[in-house]
Length: 629
Image (tube, rainbow, N blue to C red; front, side, top):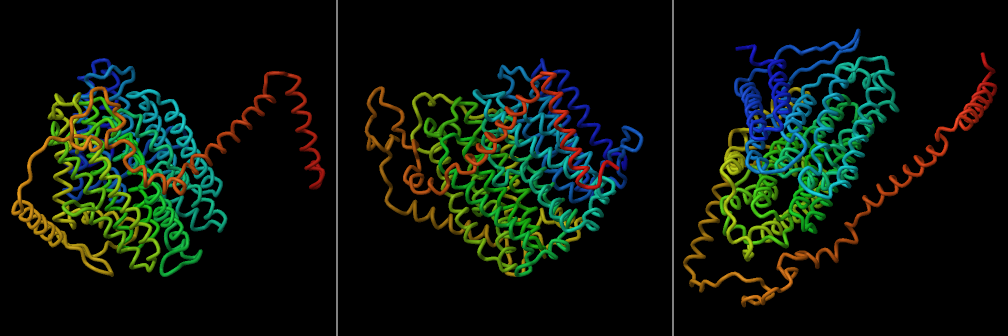
């Protein structure tokens, strides 16, 4: 039985599943079944590890060349992030079987899906920087090849993701170079030792490069602009895994840099404020701004997937607030929100993907009334919205409560108002997608739309049930979080099955659910006890309930420019300044590239002059500093 709990078994399942999915990609249905079964088998192994409290005791080492090897292993901290990917994957693969069966795609969707899963899981299993880089690139390139596979045009999204992927990979390579130059090995113990013995400049450089490398993949501001483009233009069946699962690898990397390689002890030597390190404060502020700006930008989106993409950016901001705050409560809140975000973001992209599958429409202003023809999808999507907005009856409230409590406990109340505004924006964009997509008038062309297929609803139902169950017993996920925090030298806050504790207060899932239930009952009594209204048919608001005229311009749909008044007021403050800044970087790099092409143009005479000038410059420098010898 112990052989089951090994890195080799789990890695072998994913590798074989990836290979078979590629080999059978022309037989799409068979390829999908193969991917689903291999993903399910991997998820069973991972779940069994957690339930039986048994992780592989030994690392797996693979030697490529003499002295060059990679090391793989699993700790409880890496297990938490690995579980987010491996357990989510078979649910998304099951969801994808029906919509992908009819897609006329030229790329091996399931092979690339499994390769991204293998890469993401490998990142969490890596025990050295080289292993992490190899799996990081597998994950990045497989996702890159899926951009535009479902929608056109997607060239801009492809280029943006490629550029930021190169930035992230370059950051990891720079970390490898830094550690190698310090004389330590690339394993995690060697990286930690290099930081401990390094100079202040080395530590600061390591921290900044690490945050850029991994924060880019997590989509933290100002490196977030790839996410709305990439999430929008990847296949609807993959986006749930892209946002819900793969984004966690960037957060995992940031946790490694801040809490494992450097540690709060070293960070505290660079100044602290109310028991919060100065660097932690900077990370928390960036997280809060990400939560706010992402939420505000989500409000203005008419494309349903782009709205959810900006929502994902906003939710990642909360996690960075918890990372920056640190301590027992803040770190627990960040890890708890990692689990919650995996679930509710997956069900949200699945829900809107089901609507897109049935209608072929992405724009909210062209949807409406889907609750009448897809009621089951609506209710599951609604639970996901509740979790994202931290509304009771879901576990989304528990993780955000811990983050808020962590901020108050550390005396950084200035962050709380920013998070409160971010929460307001979450309510607003949640209302927009609900009202624009599911409520209101059902368009004539969608009257014959059917409910989502069973294979699409089952994964959504499983995630929905988990979000509701953990609302009753918020302490259940804390068992895994407690083990993970123990691996990085932290103690989890006090908790029981139904309660979470902090230095400020106590959260009881049972009390919250009972109070919510009582409020719901009272509202129902008031509704049904009052005078009954007359049933009227739904019409767009601009017609005042009258029958709309034939061939009337559809732009008058109530969801068109839904938040136009807010946009007019807020857009000057939440404009595309970050995009414009990256645009200037792009134009500057393009000018450098054009200059380089004029020099390296294939003309031998030009190369000879370049060598001659370079020799003169080197000679002058050597002569200035003591001659050639």
